[in-house]
Length: 147
Image (cartoon, rainbow, N blue to C red; front, side, top):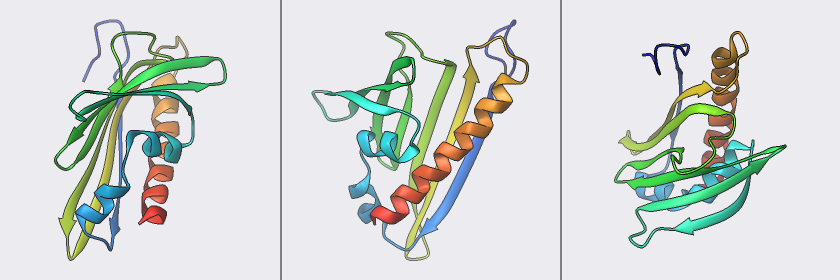
């Protein structure tokens, strides 16, 4: 998949884990703020709740960078991406799907992310995918510990 004619391909990463709790139990632990905190790379600076509780905008900051993530609540979890109404931070594109599905009297939790960096560095997207995989694994650890 190409972002545009001049950019390298986005990288996709996916991690998953079985958690011996029901999807509603897991789902009650999820929130945009907690997801950002569990990933561990950025600090939550501000949270704007949507009027219908389906969309939440989280402003995040890190060393020398700040940007907004748009979280959409879905029936099976969340979809979140860099908001298109402001700076994208280090990303040309970043989108993540967190799903919680029933499995064997528990839940299968999956995080899948597509990422491309906004940096003219060789192999930048490979590095971003490697880093993103670590963030997603930390988020899975946080979810597992919370339930």
